[in-house]
Length: 247
Image (tube, rainbow, N blue to C red):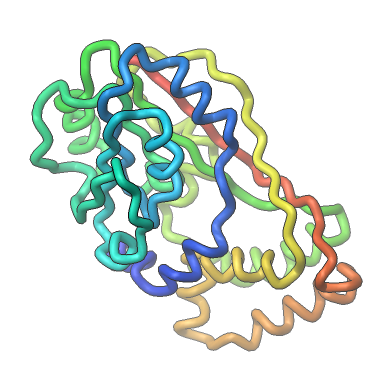
């Protein structure tokens, strides 16, 4: 299966339901970059990271292999959106002060991607990748989430997701790793917002394609009994993964 197709459908929901990355992350990247002329948001999705980078860099180029994601990207004055693979671009050599990958590095062909990054990143430029894993609410709700969602959809994850689950420890980064802060990522959602987020999981959608949506309703009802008022918002912590390196 072409993995980019996992993100073609539900792109509107993806934009609305995915959590916002920590603001401190962007300040940290800004402090790392000596120049702030040009940044590349690679595998940009709907442009969430690009929107924040646009407040720091003169120009941001945001690319994604999914046409639907690019169609649903926001219009931002100094961001250029384009459909492109990560491993082969028409960018000039030594172009970018920063290259970042948010929630997507595990999908790439590293044998082709790393040479491309080295080609287009300026000497002394920064490469950064980050992402998040499982949400945690409370021991009781986490247990229900595990039983009624994660255990059910587990066979439908692509193998690449495990790289992120393991905090990218199995990826050999060809850069000087920087001693970065430990960023945290929390959201404040009600139960419907939480399930909108779960709906964006690629494994959720692949399970639904084969078996339908009954399991989703069953899981919602099970969590609702423990949640209480489903409109009540709860703090949900996401396991966050961050890497920054220097050329």
